[in-house]
Image 1 (cartoon, rainbow, N blue to C red):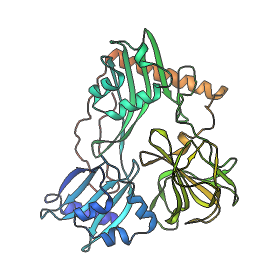
Image 2 (image 1 turned 90 degrees about the vertical axis):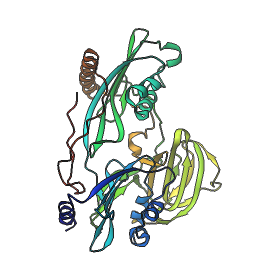
Image 3 (image 1 turned 180 degrees about the horizontal axis):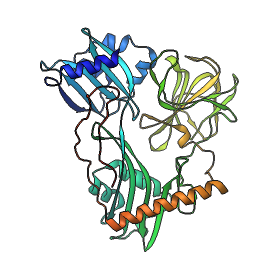
Image 4 (image 1 turned 90 degrees about the horizontal axis):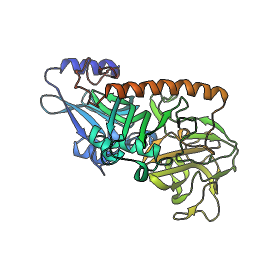
Length: 400
């Protein structure tokens, strides 16, 4: 019913409605936003269930959101992206505002560029593309294997090929680096994103990253991380921003990485919860705990692999398990993409597949160098369907 209403709303206000695009300010909360726009706080927050209230906490600074208003400047609909898959949809129907979480429709474009080093990879990438995100991704993936300060020279070549999502014709979410090459002292250095979503060098060795220990040893994963999941009971879109490890009550839970405990108490649907702050903006969360180990408290420093608590079923939980979350600068990310006990080694079949993928990447890099592809912002594109419908998408030009 809501789908048809959204279509009807847009088509009947097509010539009188207008869409405004805004950037979410640093420090602004969802409640601040409702107050600023004079929207009903009770109906759009306090009447929500706990899971939806927690969703609103995922709003992050810098995200662009849209507001659809009629010719009287009255708000009809709002889209607030939470991550690259899920967004909050606020809409007016029969005189009252409603809240729902819906999937984000986006288009992915593969882009490539090459440049000559002038100052540093970080600064030159920003100058070329205007993207700090791309610069950070590049440096993070080479920092453990190369010394830019000693071996890099002015005029050395750099190539990047990456995927960028577009939402309503604008860049959206973090770029995904597919492959990169930097030439230093006449030698080329490569990294490749393998099909297992980890980065490897040209020899098939995994690029060192933020490595964590498994928080419950030998436990079975009962629920995986997902930014959008259709709840079979509640019949609405939900996010599961962590990984669940099913284990017997009382099973030891260890710190996934060294850091400082910043929270150790009960917290709503999390039940007994521990938060640990790590280096580089990382934070891990351990929920539904039976109890904390003696001596574990806020402010205490713990080491990777140290027992901090025990598996339980406190909070909103149907059985004993650990709900484990990994966040970077407050944003939830999939722990399974970075959580590994040791650096992975590719086996025979995996290495064969990797070599084939590496060859394809290398050809793409050579084409980029040959064509001297320069980064260009995606052209402004016309919307090809009604703006706020869940199935709406925007056409973006194909990859170079």
